[in-house]
Image 1: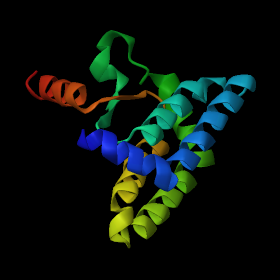
Image 2: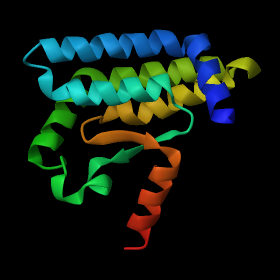
Image 3: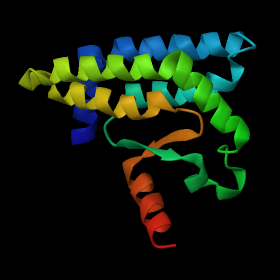
Image 4: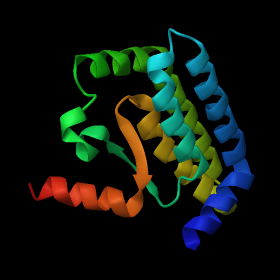
Length: 144
């Protein structure tokens, strides 16, 4: 229930605009042939910006180790993303997150921006899953 309230709060205080921006970016990357490999990554960032509370980021190798994207192509795509978009998107999310956290009322939205920093740097191969499933995957990885 608390996650629902925080997600609703986030939606009305900046999350809608960010989510809409990432949704448009997802559709544009699907239309343009050159950016087609980034469509899934933009979709994952859209999902996290829409409902950041109660969700977390995991690498696809934790979900499906046999279908890991973190091969040479995934590394190259992440490197290109970082050089062209990732670093300034991360800086923008840090700045907005700090500005949101200056007010007590904006702290939940600021936290959302700090979560977006992590996925906006290297999004290829990252998936947004529910927090319980992410905790399960992290425990499974730890005890292997």
